[in-house]
Length: 196
Image (cartoon, rainbow, N blue to C red; front, side, top):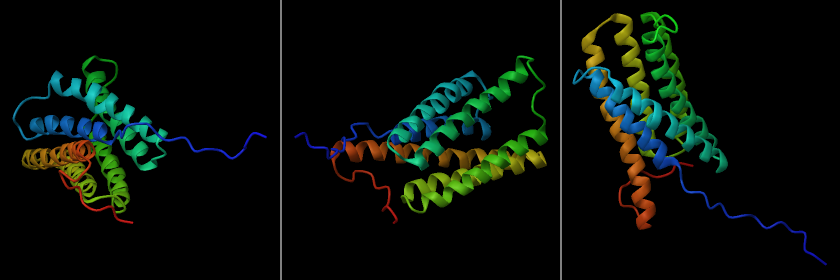
């Protein structure tokens, strides 16, 4: 007689979090160099936004779905599509497909993303300290950018740029820590304990 007890299949899928975190972090750092006033909004930022910040994060999110990680799926695909929509907001106006977004529209866009990020921040309280820093600083970044655009205050926008660089670097750190800790089989770069 053939046994009918199912044997669980081992998940051989690699951890997609480092890809998603590095894609988010590197693109965020480059955009916020612009926000801080180091250079203009240019094709390098939009290219990174579309292909690394955008598509790479969507791919990471899809892999998270395969790993049954709802938080990872929601975060990576959402922020991947954030970057794609950000590039589209700029390019559709420049190409004359539709009127460019008004200042009020951009404030609404940034505010909704800030609220979404704040909600996800509560999910990180059950994860690790590194992700808490990423989502905490990202929430602050969206608030600063929304306030800067709402008031037209360039000082707030430049300050937001520096804060955004910190946010992006924290995501890069978390991504690289995941890679090195897995490669070496020990804690090379700490990310904080997992809270249960």
